[in-house]
Length: 424
Image 1 (tube, rainbow, N blue to C red):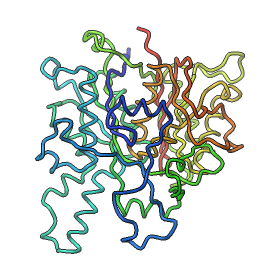
Image 2: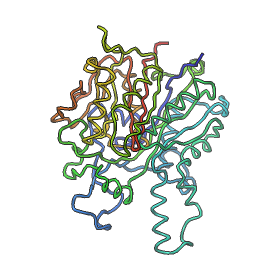
Image 3: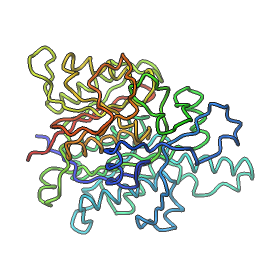
């Protein structure tokens, strides 16, 4: 018999705040974390006039506030620093006493798309401008995508399963789903699962710009990310990290720790269709797998509605992607899709790429805990093709017993996580 798994802690470093409390408060208030890009000067790269000058930046981040020493800071790329800060908050939130819990039973799985993008770009510039001897001997350890997970494990001495995932923008959800599987199959009692990203470099921006994926709404940055709106024209790139503490239920109960919610299902699939254009059939299958895994009935022909109350959609604010996800949801739930609140918190956070699924899973857990659905801001004129029960532009207090968090990414990667209100 598989073991039950609950969420007992979380940490967040986001464009809306440097901790979970501030991030959640700003989400519920409908605030945008999008502003002017400051990480580099596009003019130095002969950027076209419509080059995006907006991003979701983590403001005034100081690792020392989390007790991260100067030497550790020098050895970690920003994406690893964000991850470690989020992990420290999550461990404190879950009241994990590293002196009482066997470190062999605690694992770490953190996702990322670009890993040490900042380090990579800095070291390339040093090599091109000054030669090979100018490259730092620490450049590879700082750049490697697994170094966030390694850094967290080293900081605490956690010796359980430790690995990293890179599956485009589904990676954060894959991290949580696979960590969920490890715990319910007795390979760990606690997993720190999530994702971290610090992609705001000139090369990453240029690549996404050239692919046509980014919003070019430079006037009024806070209005640029507008999932499901008819005027959307691309996603807004963001940075940050989110780490959830997943724990075996009896282990959590024995510690008397607060439980946010229970994770009950996980699905993953591939579109096998196109590198950048989504196919709703792939995500629909993924959602069905998560529902089946969580024993959630979906009878689209029967008189009763689905048990699902809320879906935190992947919807990034791209013309094709948002419509494809709507079609996937309607494929799964049929006429009952209109009974489910659907919204995208990327309207406020922007798109954290490999960390997006982790952040949105955390937000979904908070929504269940507080019985509040965050708003979908900037939804001024709904796209007629996005004909679902979309969350309004104000937070909504309502019953949430079961919620889903969807993620998709380049290459046709899909993940879906199912959460339920914990009732013992």
